[in-house]
Image (tube, rainbow, N blue to C red; front, side, top):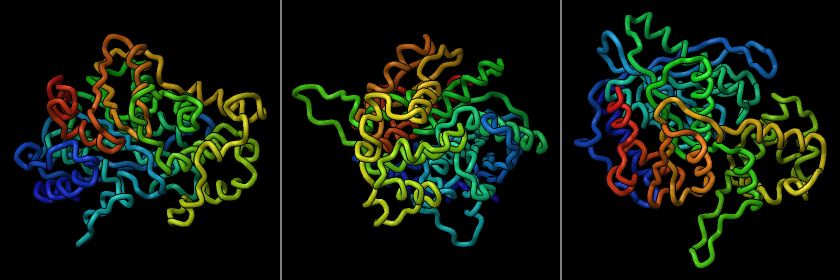
Length: 399
């Protein structure tokens, strides 16, 4: 299906306002950010083998290309952030072909739509995996949330499927870029590490609000890691949806790492049924979300302080092993992090900046929430992004 330049710009203007929390950016400007090309969207599929379980599973993703492209295109592998549903995935944007379909926040992958407007609409091909356990081929499977090898293999297989589809249309790859936000920021770092091990050249890597250290992120959400500075205003509190992310992480590790009793050993008895129900269906009703305890109340007493159960220790060890913090990147890499990000304190990013080699660079985003950090990476300018360029402009500069 083809989405026109005018429609892309209209949708970008609508959702720019939704993501621009705190109005840290100027309103969307068609003159500055307008699309150059109509864009064709295709759902792509592949078979993947799940490293943790050896299962073969069908997966899906999205390929977005500028209409009329010829010869070779720079390619962006885009890794989306956490979605608390099974269907809010990149490939479902093909629904824009339905007459009168209007995408909605928290129903459609709006972050992917904004990447399409800023990247595919400017001459890049964008390839995005729906992730294992998401999208039209889920078939009741639980997702592999923060499960490293399964995630990397899914992203690799969808990237290769997208490149194969491009070649079938007579279009080659001229360069490769990686981009991701939140959970997708972590996935982007994992993907880069695997491509580096395989000696696949990546021209540049960008990640926004990347949860590169899962163990420390969990400690922060649970109040066991405190960055408060005397005399400073309190930092924004962790959002309510963090508890849902903790449940999904536990469920994913239970399934893919075979930690069969993890809910019973890690979650307080009074919340175990709630967690089971949430893991099964991801219900979004106000009543369910209101019953969701804070992470500090969800986990058994002493979970982060002392030995509580073998399964809990194995979970925490695996969580730490899946950290992306310590690496030496051979491609130019930028981590955009918000200075008011309610889900990720800036200090959780700094060890990655200190330990990932000379090619990594941090971009602090002034006053930015979790969503606004992502938006600024695509549309920001000036002091908001500390004098740096946006992801689209930076990618173009290193072509």
